Length: 77
Image 1: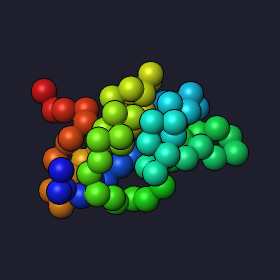
Image 2 (image 1 turned 90 degrees about the horizontal axis):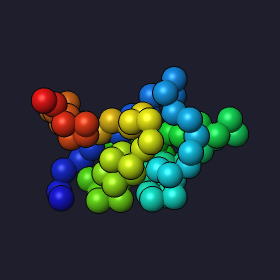
Image 3 (image 1 turned 90 degrees about the vertical axis):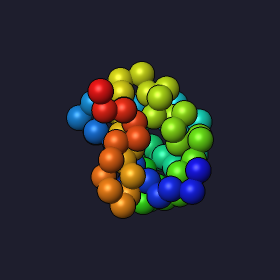
């Protein structure tokens, strides 16, 4: 992919399903309250991280291009 992404988790929406950490353990972790958070503020683009965002049951994960802030997921309509 070649891009760098900024990944955010809306912790007011996250239900702690753990799907993101299961699909992309290098990108996400659950804390003691079972709330997801990205392991790094900025990281190389990766298919597993995108799959985790797409698979989040409550759409709590957003991904932006680090350089421009352009939405990667969810896509702008």
